[in-house]
Length: 233
Image (cartoon, rainbow, N blue to C red; front, top):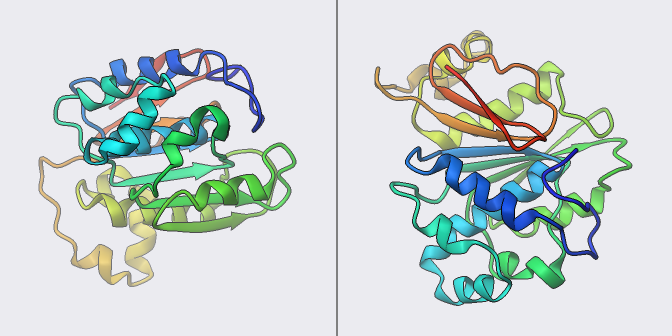
């Protein structure tokens, strides 16, 4: 199961317009700060980053409309700003013939891309092509194949990236185990940061397989492969 039919880099993705519209409706009125995606989820997450930035790029917006993607649904999201970060795991860019408008100019959302050492489903060059679509990107490599990394080092690297770019939300409440680890390792950024009591980081996770998020406070939304959503509070 996936968000749409097709994972290759030559075909049109059947149903992707409906998937993008669904996501726009789901976050309508509930602005998000960051997005994390795995595999197809990483592909569509990168597209969402581009759609949200198109408000300030009329030429790009016009090109996206010509490719019949639901841009206006993203431009009408109340209170939604360009994302503060994007994390992609085993991601790739969409077929340029049909979705190249989304990559016609660099995407300015800070991005972090996780690369598995033995991913034979989404090959390394495909993920690297996606990284080149972003003006600012980091790469985290981990041992394994096409799955969401669960080893402590990789998870902490991704969490650091998210917290560094989010600038809102308490690390001790959103990622308690990670925050404790940083305190023990003398992380100046974690120890010196001040976080308001009413602030929370909202991270939308768009991937097909995900363990239950460890969240004490804040709102984390998980989209699964059947286009439903569950909220953890």
